[in-house]
Image (tube, rainbow, N blue to C red; front, side, top):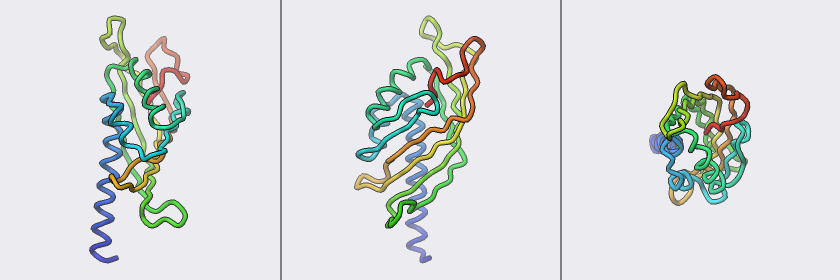
Length: 164
């Protein structure tokens, strides 16, 4: 590899990492406009393994906005990011996939709108598909694979409420 190719790869890795971080921040801050902007045209998300929906970015953002009202405090931690470029057949370097583990503690809303304790916590793995666009790297697909959850006493540990 030449130095120019190595530098381009490093720059792409930094951009992809930044996009994944922006995803977590958008969900945690409830910035659904920013969330929608992270997706390429036609981008989709699938939260079904966590009891949610699958759909285009706008549909999922609307669903998340309603679902996350249950949790006034959220903190997404996305770790162990594994990035692979050129995962589509006949790719020219403009696609990437990221698998990353997550832990998602959230504080449930109390009866007066404040927060309660203990927290609802879940974890699993994301599969992100990315594509390079004129605006930079964007999400073409997000798939949540929830592996576990811990709910406060009295709250079912089934698939409600939804994790992000």
